[in-house]
Image (tube, one colour):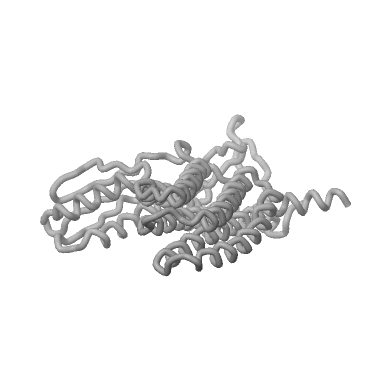
Length: 355
């Protein structure tokens, strides 16, 4: 059934044959005025994969490819503000970014090294194509089909789950080296977080590329943005667990450790189920993940009580670890709730058909 809003945006047009071989249709006057077109204006006609045609004013088509961004800096500027400007330009969709010293000066060695390290470590698909004393030019070379939002998010989720499991293993074995490796792994999650955020922002600004990044609707973009943020926060809590393992000097009491291990096992299984429910578009699996979160909250109380029986200094670290495990379950539940919102039509439709 066609919704009223769709009817308002639809105008039937008859196909005309002119000159014996050319088919034409007239365009709505309201659309012509809205896009400030006139006689002899150029428009683009784009054939979509689903068989539809998109008619695009040429000026709007030019806006799809953002012009190059120029970030002018003083040699006295600290690296962090420059990096934040660069990230902002990357996220809104610029494909070429010039980081250039003002007034013919030179970038400081600290500025250049910090920027180059950041680009290598955190900007997916971005290369430094020019590196001179006065300017760095960054070029985003990765196109939409090469790494879809779903593929990047799945990779991000796999790394996050692995970080959590390694952090708990570091706790179990008081393995400080493994804990440090977990902390270092956070950069990989941040890389994919920035990449997915960039793709989703561009899709919201230009709905024509939603399918190119592997999604279906603008609502999917919002849902995936919220999921990506929850995955990134889950990775942060894996880092928090690892950081709280580092001060520990001895193995935990077996009774306390078992409670944390059981709680962690359930929390990360909820996370993995929530992510799987997203990719499978599975309402019931998401609902099941939400229900299991209640069990983690109950287990947290028992673990906190057990942790109170150890030394004051260690108890503080253990309580923070327990809190991070609980937050992992809560963020997983948030992901599952987003899946419910994205898939609820399928459940409503199925129930309607059985009446």
